[in-house]
Image (cartoon, rainbow, N blue to C red):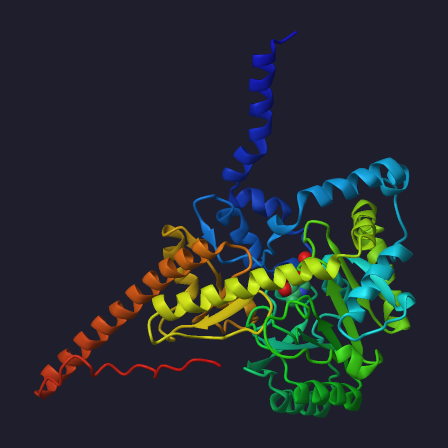
Length: 466
Ligand SMILES: Cc1ncc(COP(=O)(O)O)c(C=O)c1O
């Protein structure tokens, strides 16, 4: 029998074999499988955040890239007590398969979360999903054939982009401003599609504290959006992970409550108000649509984790879930303010950014000669990360923007992270100004004109979003 040292060595060699193979993949190896891939794999895109997660896991990197909630603020003793109770009282059930649509007890917890935002869905209209991400995937799987129009915001949730692409949707993005999706542009797009005889499968919107832009759809636009959905008989997918994470202002009515659930499909998640690790989200949809979504879920994963549904049940039974959301609101409000102060201090005057009233993200836009995908490589050398703006578009727009997360880092880290990004941005701005100035001087020299000094470089005026 081999000694333990020898066994460990051999195991190590076995483990590293796939990694070695990956490192030596040749075009010949790729060709061997190429004919097997479904056509849709050609349009599948990687999620920028997922790619970045591997790099940003390094402890020396300050990541403003993820959308990570602060799970360290969840009391470990509470977690331990709930899991112990489950082990003692419901071990067999918690380790068993569960119904595809989710347990009635989980649905009751979810209904109480929706009630906190003024909605009262029928639990039968609701399916528990493996995170909100699965709900987006199931909706696209249920509704989208290749080439079907899907409308969403510009920028949109970067995690939805790979989903829409993998179902080969024809994604049409509607510009957003400080009041969310521009309804005038949406009206035109809907009219154009109607003239072309194309019915969009749905309008995907994150109306409150949007990921990535941090903006919120105004009350008036919410009403118009719901009216347009009715006029055109188009479904709206309201994705609302952040509605309860509000730091300023008054809550807006959800699209679901304005519509009553005829044309609005509602997506929620416990990821940002409890834990993303438990993978509990949900979808509320009109019964015929929900039935198809349920069939899609059966094929995808049979059921959402039974164990984490039991955890949710125990946690909500304690009756303190709102208090924890209030704690998170305090933490995040303060982090948002730290980030906004740091941006003011360290970003050059040519940059502009949003001032979110809630949620987890600030969206910063730099002068358009800066490409944030290139800038990220420079930032990573300074051990700091953000999501480049292009990830939030299907059409290559967003190159000068970046998404900055303020929930997943402590206040000192936020200041330092923004300082480092500010430095690489300022370097780019200075470089551009130097080159442009030299070019201008060169041109003027050729024309024989007088040197007008250093401040002739045309720059966009400083403008800050409210
Ligand atoms: C708008 C939006 N939808 C859906 C999700 C997915 O969340 P989860 O799958 O963790 O519930 C996120 C996560 O960041 C999000 O921001």
